[in-house]
Length: 479
Image 1 (tube, rainbow, N blue to C red):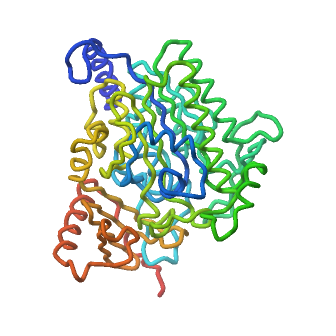
Image 2 (cartoon, rainbow, N blue to C red; image 1 turned 135 degrees about the vertical axis):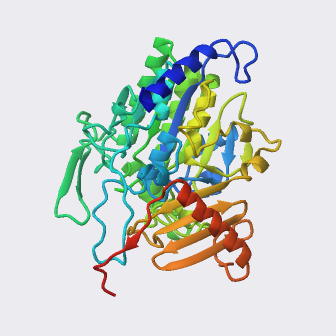
């Protein structure tokens, strides 16, 4: 029996055994919860009204936060997109699965000081994804938007547990947000171009964010009609480049004086369209009587793009391992479980969403699959939630170069209020106390040498435990 067959058998057995038990194993189990997961692309930590922005208009997302739990110290598993998506699907750190770089990416730079660590260009089929776990438990599973985890041969959403795939392909952006959604992109370090089409039908003037929302709502209606619980995975292409928005929405932000803008007007309009999408999905759930029976998760895959928005008070941007590159919004709305309006400082990462979804489905956890994720259910109540959530360490490993400002190959650990960054090129250590210095302005390595040494030892041990790829000297490097 293969590992994947074993997990399938385990899920089916778990489904049978828990058919008449609640989450504690006592008494009748309630109806399985539907799951809606919004994953926004490149949405910065500061890009929402509920996160303190006075520029971006996000009333629907703000309402979601009022009705659920907003996590202030939530992190993406990587500062670029593909690895975070892999972590959500597998419940594992990218370093453990070798999904450490965005796809397709180019060959390593022959002029660099180091050779980059090896990485995979398809999500391994051996991984038992959250979509497969829920599908095997009787859920309808639908993917709407950006996949970016593999190729058409055997690495698409339909190969990893999704019964329906709308818009998902190997590419990281749509090429164009307006019909006909054609994409063309020069592959780094090659003389080749990739061309693709996100959706092969539509009508002139149609906007991709709206179209994907139409498709997602149709999926919800069909699930209601079929009387089946559903997993709606909604990884929007927005607000990734190209920065394209509806002209009438952009015009509102053009009127705001430049000195009062947090980002580009067109980017702000893209954020507003995402907010409209969230509002439409929530309205559909309410209209169909499903709102109280649905777990809703809202988050981002990495920090905001430096040309599009300001991540202040956080330092840096997408691609970097300062807070602006990896700290992201996270909101969880789950009636009866998530305390309305709670703001939690519990440390969370993308890998935690897998076991959290299993808990919502009333399924047993699969610790051998989601090795690096923990269920966030204990953190959804005020009593002790944040304290328990800060007892853990979070890790990152990025043995690659990329073109984003402030980005260097590095490994990172966060433990409590403390964060250590080990950079590989240039070689260095940086230590910050995030409680006192959220902007990471003061490196405390020299004043806190014992703490830095302890965190570095823990980070090194973690890399060994997950068999993280190391960078190696480039014999062709010329200073």
